[in-house]
Image 1: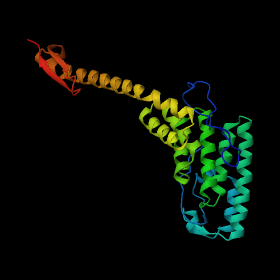
Image 2 (image 1 turned 120 degrees about the vertical axis):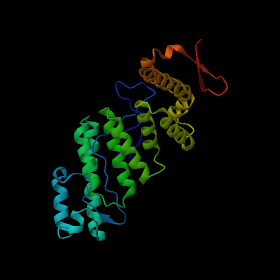
Image 3 (image 1 turned 45 degrees about the vertical axis):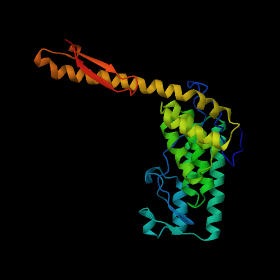
Image 4 (image 1 turned 30 degrees about the vertical axis):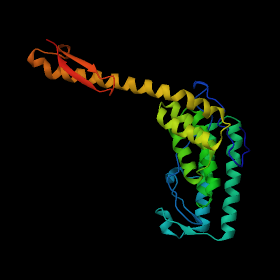
Amino acid sequence: MSENSDDDYASADEKTSNVPDHSIGSDVVAKPDSSETTGGRYSDNVCPKDQQPEMVKVLDNKYVSDAESVKSGGVVELTEEQRKELKEKAVEVKNRGNDLYKAEDYEEAIGLYSEALLVYPVDCSNERAVCHANRAACYVKLEKHEESITDCTEALKMKPDYLKALLRRAQCYEATEKLEEALEDYKKVHEMDHSNDTAGEAIMRLPKQIEEQREKLKEEMLGKLKDLGNMFLKPFGLSTDNFQMQKDPNTGSYSVNFKS
């Protein structure tokens, strides 16, 4: 599965060094953009002011320096000429990020993808989705899977049929042992692309792993309950060893009986 930089530079089929082959695809890192607003507008409220690129501050001064509402997270209308200039600059910054990703400089690439998100007009949903997905690719390379999940989710909000972002999120869910969420995403990938072998294999493999995970959680929970029971029974000269737990094979529930 390969796409050029205009669609999504990093391939979700690339693997990280210490994640099993059925796990993670490669991707990017940076603080997720939390300033999504609407309309053909520009917002400067994406990352802390002390981390905002100088270029964006210059653009602020050029277009919205007198708009105090923007300084507090508001928005300002842009002319078509201004929108075109912002989009061209954002594409330039994003492409520089792609070059850094190719050079395996993931931290710097993240910074540029974040900068591009600051510059793109907020209504450029597809372009912003690509920046989120590319940044997610960097996060995976840096083994920051939770951050990658966040960016993939943002990309999917903007572009719900973004197959690569969906597959990448599924792989990150699996890497963080969120198997049920991973299975759900893999099923969606399979619905969108029946030829995707990664999703097809995961759909066959994960149900058993999910059941094993549930059983393990049950055992851990019962162990904690046993410890709690012993604490309360000790003053009476009793312990949970004086009781027997029996599992109902039909319902999976447990009953507790006193040992005579």
